Image (tube, rainbow, N blue to C red):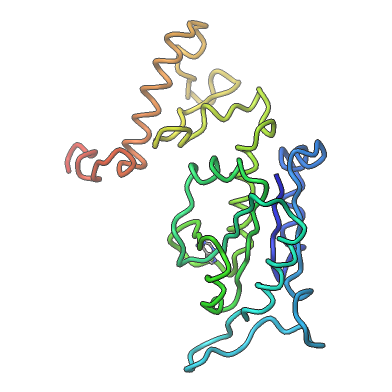
Length: 235
Ligand code: ADE
């Protein structure tokens, strides 16, 4: 699967996307991450990518033309089953199921905004506007990295058998993963739950299942359709 990222800071993503399983997946040819400098798609000598908003207002907006030229150039050289996403705090929230769906595509083209936002006409050239959470980042780069990592992990072969995606939070069910422990068996009086040391796989599985639901109820009750009051004893 191929990821094309359009940004005015393409170098900012290079390190993060080249380590760990993403680095291994690229070396193995399972994913191909291409970083594009948005300024390469400008047509003026100053390579300007931003301008003042019509109607006034604070700050600068990203211009429509470099993004559209970038999308068209990338599409001319990529597979047909490609999805174009604008990262923005005004988009629909990104979910694990999107990562699973998009991992079946030939490619994702990710557009990173900066400044006060992006000319609204860019939306007409993308499939979707996506946000990674209800907060405002300085730009779409960190959000693009989140989408690439989550989607790459779901690409067949990227996550090996020692790092299973089946025990992940949100894997096929809206709930968190079970708490996990490693050596030592005791640290400052805190003991690893005895059942995990028992070797009894059926009991371990039942324990993990119960703990996963407990943790989801405590930390993310809305995933289970519960309100916070329903999950607290004194509420
Ligand atoms: N750019 C700025 N904030 C963002 C967010 N929350 N999600 C995606 N892109 C963004």
